[in-house]
Image (cartoon, rainbow, N blue to C red; front, side, top):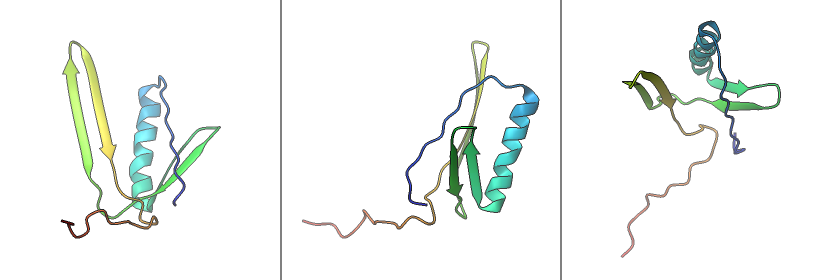
Length: 88
C-alpha cells in the first residue's frame, strides 16, 4: 500500500472497551493486516515479519501512562536505498 494516510483518535473509554481494542491489535498482526478506523475513516496497514516494539510505563505525580509503539516498513512499498556508496 503506497498511499500515505494517518489515523488518530483520542477518547475516554472504559476498561472493557480498551481491552477490546488492545485485543484486536495482536489479531491484526497475526493476520498480517492492521485496520484502524471509525465511522469516517479507515486505515489499512500490511504488517511485516519482524517489527521493532517499544513498551513503556510510567507513574509520575499520581499520573499513570502506558505507551505501546510498533513500527515497520510497509512490505508492499518499494524501498529506495539511501545508504549507497559514499562519494568523495
